[in-house]
Image (tube, rainbow, N blue to C red; front, side, top):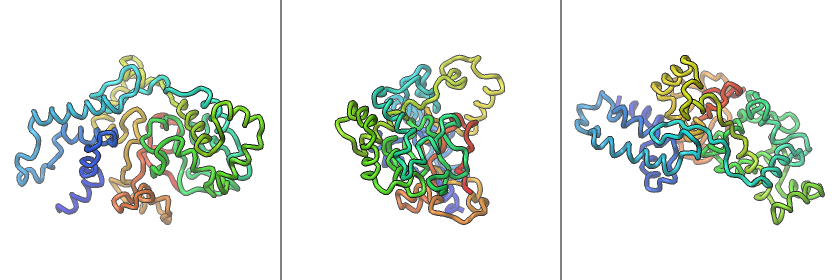
Length: 340
């Protein structure tokens, strides 16, 4: 019985990893803080069936206050956006009106986002899979790349990706610029063989090069992806009704919506769907309440490995980055990674 509880518990919350990250608070995620806060606020450890063999293990009220004050301080120091209506005692935050960007880099990045020369045959652009008129996705179960080739997983939204702690479902890229460097040379996405090949094509466009060299000293992969990442920082969606509610506008939501938000919090959905993006802050096991991959009914692929593909840690098998709930009505990815 205890072994089963340990296995179940570590799927939800790796306390050992939290302790390791606490040695350097900059490595903590918003989900780390949210999980610890929920455990402390709700007296969840030790669980009730073991309370008699761990008598006195739960923190008292004074100890709880110390921990909760520390969590609030970490959230205040590292995670609150520069926006009206933030609250370090709350797990969800409003989207700021804008992020600091370089407008010249943004203009270059926007052009590159819609530029076919990043792909091997000119047919695929960044916007092919991340369409700005469709919630930042292509709304396909799996994305289609060069020559109609299909990937193993669907495209995450580009909107509000700037607030993710990691990029890609498996978190293999840390920044927007790092993420932008992957698809161009992926054989089933944009299909270029090397970045040298891409840079050679870009260099033949005299107009583009004139604009590029007015902003960057030279053209290379790092500068190209930096420009794309800078543009993607502008793809945020502030001032939704929910954001206005978080900022204190009580009439921004209907009574039904307010009750829904209370249910959302009471069910602890904001533990993983936390922060400004309401997601993107942790990797969670796919199928906490059932055997997701068995129920899927298809043969497993490498894409199903999730975070394990990056870390090679067996405990990361089938863990995926939590999807953002921002603009979720516009995307097909609701609480799960969709596959064929």
